[in-house]
Length: 314
Ligand code: FES
Image (cartoon, rainbow, N blue to C red):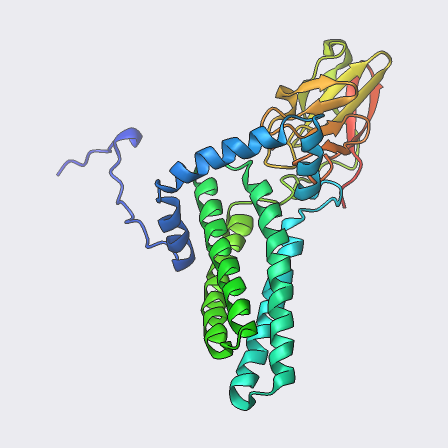
């Protein structure tokens, strides 16, 4: 019996059937497939982006404030803790009230519910602002998360009105239903952050060399032109101005846009994707939506080569 050796490019492979996605991803994928959400998302996003304008315009400062650029951290997750905490307190107090109908417990629950409503209003505005920079399936999950949260907010306002007009038991049942939905919505918010990377520092995991590494012949640098280089596995963008050479990370901390494809003006580079501006001298964020500074590098020229050393990583 002769045996034939099958050429490498003709080998037959046993196909591994796709596994069922874990439940958490299955839920997210169901939301991602809801194309009807785009009909609402597109005009709303377009209106928001027009409202906030371009970097340097007055309303853009409001957007930066709501994104959390001034804080160095996304503002939305800070505010979402308020309604979730307050409404958790309210539901615990409601459970106690259902057993003893104590007036003080009822008042405590109403105050918690009202605090949660105030916090949810702030979380809604900041969340909507962050959402205005999303696209594709992220935008769908984001708007579905926002629609759920809006309905929970209205439900809790209605619950508070019922409680204050003598229909406490109905109000308690209504806010309890809202609380259950808020847990699901919080899960979707977590999916946006932890699975899709919305709101995180997109260069947090970049390392870099503690020693200087050569990245480019100094003669290749063109005055005033952004130049991308590789600094021991980290993309960096160089800029030559007179006798100075500046270098910051080339990956935008907001959503990983390529800063070397952006524009340079007045000491800052503007990301081509959503307009975040970073100062070339120290990586500081001058305009959002980015909230985290760009990585920075020490620069020197040795033997005709530009050399970089990462400055700010642990
Ligand atoms: S990726 Fe969004 S501003 Fe750069």
